[in-house]
Image (tube, rainbow, N blue to C red; front, top):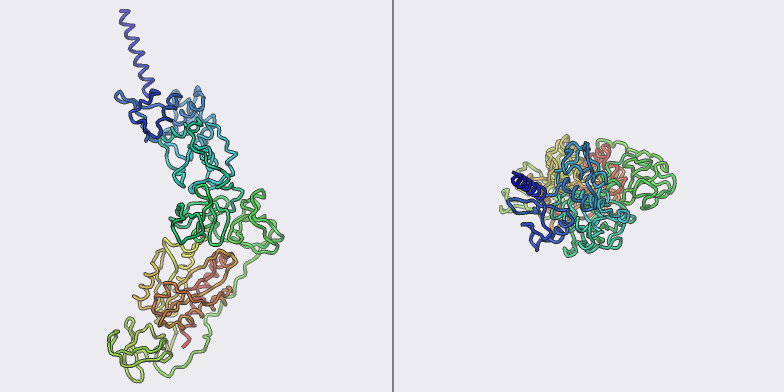
Amino acid sequence: MYFKKICLMLCILFISASIFTIHNASASGSFEDISPKHEAYEEINYLVNLGVIKGYTEKGKTYFKPNNNVTRGQVAKMVVVASGNKPLVVNKSSFTDVQVGSELSGYVERAVQLGYFKTNTKGQFLPNKPLTRDEMSYVLTKAFKLDTSEYENIDSPFVDVDITHDYVQYVNTIYYNGITKGSGQNYNPDSQVTRAQFALFVARAKSEKYRLELPVKGVAVPDTSEVIGLVSSTTDGLNIRKSKDSSSNANIVGTVNKGGKLSVYAVEGDWLKVSSEDTYAYIYKKYAQFLDADGNVLGNVQKQVTTTQSINIYVKPTSSSKVISTVDSKVKLPVYSTVSGYYLTEVNGLPGYIVANSTEDVKVEQPSTPAQKPTPDPDPITPSVTGDLLGRVTVDNLNIRQEANSTSTVVSKLKKGEYVQVNSINGYWAQVTYNGQKGYVHKSYLKILNQSGNPLKDRIIIIDPGHGGKDPGTVVGTIAEKNIALKVSTLVTQKLEAAGANVLMTRTGDTYPTREGRVDFTHANYGEIFVSIHVNYAANTSAQGTETFYAQTPGDMHQEDIDLATFVNNQIVKNVNMNDRKVKKGNFIVIANTNIPAVLVELGFLSNSEDRAKLTDDQYVELFAESIYKGILEYYSKQ
């Protein structure tokens, strides 16, 4: 009987030992799924020797399961052991999801007590939730007492961890301590960490032997005392280049997608100097928008102020931050928001903060509403041909054909400036009468003129709101060119339709017709004139005003383009009180490839604070639209 009791006790002890060591692995590396060639082989066995890592015994074999995600609960135990601490004795759990008496409870309580984890959520620890890479940076920094002070003023080397990221200083700390190198130019802060990855990171944090080659800090990557602003990309796949040259792909060192943030060190013409991969790099300024100190878009201008003395522009709303520039007394500045006694403003294209009580409010004056009926200039010329609908020839040697096709017999020719009576129009062919003889001419070479009623009645006018859909055009803060262009274009269309015109828009919503598609749309609808509406941008924020472009191509009736551009441009300059940048020649696809009078108008500069204030003000938007309408009316009023 005694012998049986002894045997029974030995069996119980053997079973108990098996239970308590079920997850243990030998220091010799007996994990079935970790071969000596595994990248983390040495580190895993180093941590096994320290009692930090355990595996899983299944059917007599031990597995590490390197590709499983490591959980917050597992991490709590590992870092407590690795940092040389013991679990707490717990009588009452601080967390509703961690049971008192479980092995995990003591380790979780100790890890939280030591500050290895940030504040829990609503009384939970979330022990089964996979650890993310940003959390990992915090845990390792705290558990191994890595000094963050040396890295607080170092900009992140990763494009997906900007200066406003909650964990940026911890990511910097483990990076510059040789614990992680990220994945190319990305750190992937929201990605989960596998067991093998965490073993590598813990081993590196614990022992200098396993550290990566340390990157040089503060040389290739300047500290934040040099940062003058923060931008986000407005498009996917924005190239990051090592030099200011877009003519080749050889200098591309990475890309950043829409919304990706980068710290800016200088504005150099059309380029922004940023940091990427531990060195300076460049992105094209047109495809980035500046953000405020908290990483938010600037929004709309709330008001304008005038400085009452010479003042500093700070990168943050505190006088202890970097001074970006200074502004003289009596300078008018836009205000986007108010933060703790500072105004968020913009100077030379850079957002910054000024002391609010060093300014006084000013009121943007609204121009008076122009008269509804413009006075045509020059006065209409009375043609010798009579009829309700006439056509003035816009090119020399225009063929009059016997039938409405380009292969029909030529019965006569017309000179530029001559008039014909238009009897009917079918598509792009107009039946005309000239010297008592009927024939057909291509409508695109006639300026169709109503001789009674409104000059715009039945005229087929194509209005083209620039950009759209995936192409926002110029973007400043939350303000996108595509939205302004659509808003103005819609108002112009409404005004023209009210006057009896047949108006078609290349887009009526947030869609993206290609440039060639806009030209095809114009021709398919037999347009008679084409007006493309845009908003301008320049690296020099003092650039402002309205300019209108026409295209000159061989055999083109470019004088009609010039007339239309001049009437539209002059109306905007006069009625909206814009700086006159004149009518210019520019062979943009949408106007160069159309076979009718076509112009492209740049209403104003979104990069200029005064122009932007008008472009985002509904009263001014109405005036822009009214002016374009009046310019088109003036064009058709000229006989």
